[in-house]
Amino acid sequence: MTIEVRPASLFEDVRALVGPKSPGANVCWCLSYRIPSGLNKELRGPARGEYVAGLCRADPPPGVLAYDGDEPVGWAAVAPRSTTSFARNRRIPHVDDLPVWSLWCIRVRPGHRKQGISHALIAGAVEFARAQGAPAVEAYPLDCGDARVDLTMAYAGIRRNFERAVTHAADTTSVLAGHPRVVMRLDLR
Image (cartoon, rainbow, N blue to C red; front, side, top):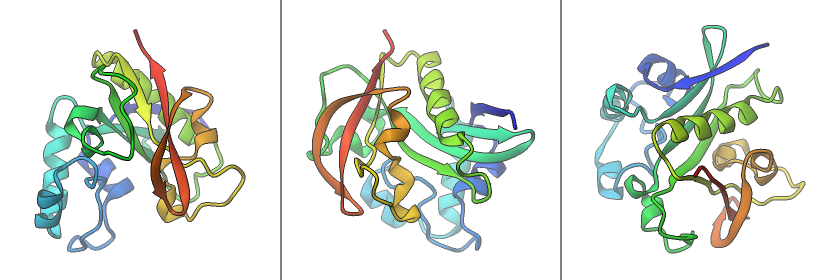
């Protein structure tokens, strides 16, 4: 299998990874950290997908997709921290004042897991951010050691999956699915 990571500019491929099975469902669409909470609550059903379609047409697009041939098999959300709720999150500290990019969601389709796709997504997200001029990339994965994490909550990533590409920069007071989150970071300057 050869995995290629590309900018997430094709809405249908993004929908295949983060969209609902039913168009009217009110699922995340990977918007929870990307948009203000009021707008997140306001966007219902198909309006959520329409919003994401607009993000896919924007420059830069909302993240990266991993492909096995023409099939989208993984997603990573990455954007300037200043445009996310991480800019205001009191539980996840800012290491410094650099205009870093945040990498906050990793999703690999069932049937494609345990094949290194999350590692390819992390590396691809870092390269995408670098190409956009980011001075650094941060992620906020779970520090769960060897404990298993419910797949629904594993979107934040697992610290050990990030350790190949980025290093531990800070602890946080944020907890997700019963596990502490850490700040992992890579300086791109």
